[in-house]
Amino acid sequence: MNASPVPPTAASAARRAWMAVLARTPRAELEAAFSAALGGARAPAFDWLRPPQTGLAMVRGRVGGTGNAFNLGEATVTRATLRLRAQGGSGATVGVACLLGRDKRRAELAALADALLQQPEHHARLQTQLIEPLAARLAAQRAAQRDETASTKVEFFTMVRGDA
Image 1 (cartoon, rainbow, N blue to C red):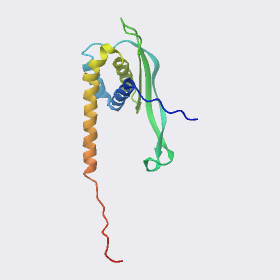
Image 2: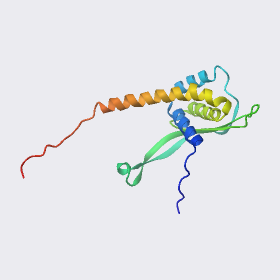
Image 3: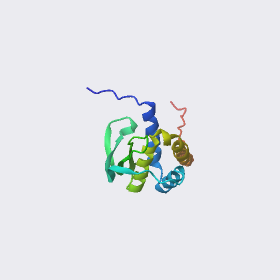
């Protein structure tokens, strides 16, 4: 018997959104934006629960987008999990990252940002100074790619002959 999936809460949907932004942002851009968002302060101390590891994940596809699922191939992914050391009133928050590619530093930055975004004292600042600008840049990049792709679209049509 299959259980129906649990609907996401607003908090989990927001976390999923910022994790997607962090996973899609190139390292140099993520490093610069994260450093600027911290305002020159040092990143908080943390302990690794799972240091950055690189492996393979199976990518699945569907025939026609809706048909039978099949194994398309494998993709290289890097994942990391860390726990911030408790400071003052904040508890130990766990941050995770999973992204395409082999960049361990990028996985570390994404996991650290994820942990800090879960803390109320950092959330608003990081959301406005880190996530929103990166999300806007990614959206502009997708729109430019969509426009470039649309410019190559070819419309085919068939003329119906009057012969019966």
